[in-house]
Length: 258
Ligand SMILES: [Fe+2]
Image 1 (cartoon, rainbow, N blue to C red):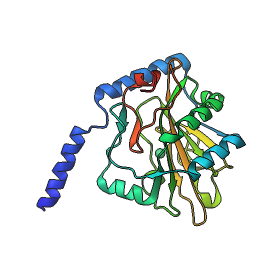
Image 2 (cartoon, rainbow, N blue to C red):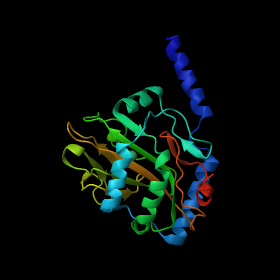
Image 3 (cartoon, rainbow, N blue to C red):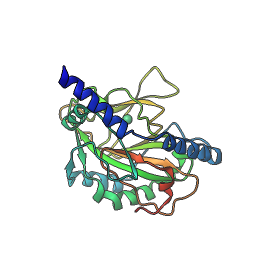
């Protein structure tokens, strides 16, 4: 009983100290997003395309030589907004997902983003910056939990996610299920060939990852994009830890990467 109470108090204190985002921080993303929407209009709900065979080969090779990490309650720096999950959630995520150390991928991803610029601009309808990059594989038959359960990502306004599936989706490789505006009560199953990319409004559209089955593999690259008012000074991607969500201040996205 006392142990249970102590854990509860500890959790409360931890959540108070590490509040995900201050009200001022949220307000600045909201205002920034209104400015972008006013100047450029709204982004598309979803856009799908396929990488060129050369870039599909690049992303496959990045996974082949990946160094694996676990997700922990940490952050790369104060420039990022981190998630603060329960200890048991980190344990479950680490049991069912293997995260890659993507910091060495920065140059390759910067080139890939430049090559896919027109497709990304079409989806976002504004300039943009990569404000987080993560990559992982999912164990076969992972449970319906976390990313595999229905959810919205709950990012601050003005962010969309670009998902890359080097081995494609469908069959034993699993899929992505979405409930779009056109079919809010009916799931739309996204499948496609190697190098499949989907950019979507991940905080507005309910979605879930359908895990791979035995014999399948579902390597995933997740690029978080922040819509911008004008072109940034630099297009180098910001990369946090697997626990970081995106930048903590919308203005940082315009600057040179520190
Ligand atoms: Fe998600």
